Length: 270
Image (cartoon, rainbow, N blue to C red):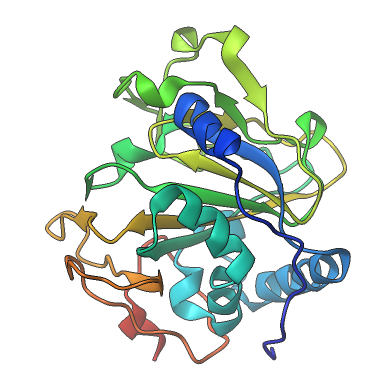
């Protein structure tokens, strides 16, 4: 896979959008990639799926930014980083890259959850970018968020043995205020941003259309990971400087590799 420039149509966030993110915990429908770039990303997604062993599901592996040079390239798209900078500040790093995909009829579900309860990061202020590779809406199981719940603190999660769940823990649906649920419908090439305390999830894709989001995790450089909990954690500085040096620095990939589990170290992809 060669690395070519992707056409973008991004911009900076307005002051109103920045305030909306603080109030609601998310932004959606942000323009990012142009039509030609969308076609390239859709093609590349198919190629990446073909790289995986038959017993490895695309939606259940992480760390693509450590394994694959093309994904690393996408993660450093200036227009993407401009959006993140407007929320995270001038100095921030990437630490996660995962495809949340729902193929027609595959039955997979992302239960209601808060990202921060999974992550041993302090302070809690990670920003997640969700890039739509294909059109996403209620029909093909768009991500849904519960508006403003990033301000309510930690909500109790319970462990589930549902084999269709992409994540092992969930918030009881009885705790969800349905009047505050918003579906993040987007066109291919658009993206959303959400706070790590925001409650969100997505149901099964019962349509005949694929739904794919490339999910990237960013943190300001003052955020530190508890390496006793996540010994494989690495920071990839993507903008500014790392004046704190809190976390191990990851090795930028030079190959067209692929992850096979959720948690891997960059040294595994030499």
